[in-house]
Structure formats: structure tokens, C-alpha cells
View (spheres, rainbow, N blue to C red):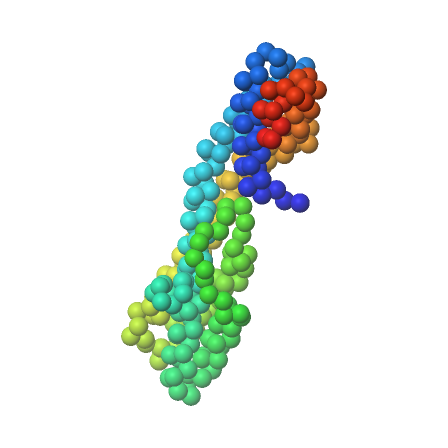
Length: 240
């Protein structure tokens, strides 16, 4: 089962709290087992905090890239005035359908592409996608780019397609599809950069041998047995 960033963050916080409580215990806390010695746990905790600092700008960048990708494809709800590729395709198709019988074949091809791109008619909900997950649109972005390219090809070769609305011109479609392609490429690059430190953090925190959860359990057992259930030391960590 995948471990969420939230779980890792919670365990990192707990390990830090445990470390602070152990410092207050003084020399009485002196286990012989290396993984739960204070210095070892402090070093591991500091390493994870350092990874978090490295990851933060990458996670921010990938979140922003995913948000922009969703905007480029889906836009926002209409009253926000941000049109994405799908709405633009619908609008351009409506225009082509109104140009008469001579354009009926192209209009039908365009409508099929609209239905493929947006089969459920769902609208964009604002908000960033977490860095460790993929948005629905991102999972099918290759198909979406192909729909956009095919759609642009149809309108660019139809001599009767000459909209006055600047949001559905051939140039606008061409630029947007290019932005979507570049956005998907940027996300893939960021995923490659983010994967190694994420894996290293997970290894440190979730190791079944000396990960934070394992260490916290062993520290609690050591303190309870060494100082007793009625001790100040046990009371300081029993709820951590």
C-alpha cells in the first residue's frame, strides 16, 4: 500500500517530538541498541528535514505545473472567464456547425473529437494537485494532445473557418496545444527530479528495521521498561 506524504510528515513530527523528550531525560536514557540511540535518531530526523527543504521548491513547481495543465485543458467554470482547450473546442465546433452543409463533414469530425476529449462534460475545480499524485487529465494527456492536434488540423485546412472570436482562432489553438505539450513535458521532468529524494525520505521514515515508526515503538518500550510506568519519563512520551 502506498504511503502518503501526510503519513510521512506525521511520523517525522512524532520522531522530532520523541527526540526532544529524550533530550529532557538526560543520561538516564542510554539504550545499547544503535537505532534508538538519541544521536542516531537525531541524525535521521535531520536528514529527513534536509530532504524536505530540497523537495519543497520541486513540489511547489510540480503543483503549479499540474494546476496550469488542468487550466489549459479544462479551464475554470465559465463565470471565471478562463477557457480551456475543451471549451474552446466546443465553441469552435458550434461555429463550424453553423457554417452550412458544405462544412458538415468537418463539423462532425470536430464534434467527435469534443466528445472524446470531454465524454462526461466535467468542469474544472480549482486547486492544486498534490505532487505525489496525478490529475485525471494528466493520466490521459497524450490522448488529449492528440485530440487538440487533430482538431487544429481540421480548422486550419477549412477555408471557411475564420472566427472573429480571438479565443478560437487557429493561432490560439496552436499555441494552447503547444503549451499543453510543454506543460506535460515539464511535469515529466519534475517527476524525474522529485523521485529520488522522495524515495530516500520514504526509506528513512518507513524502514521496517529502523524507520521512525519502528524507532518510536522501540523507544516507548525502552522508556517504559527502564523508567517504569509511573515515571516522569514515561509520562513525557506515552502519548507521542
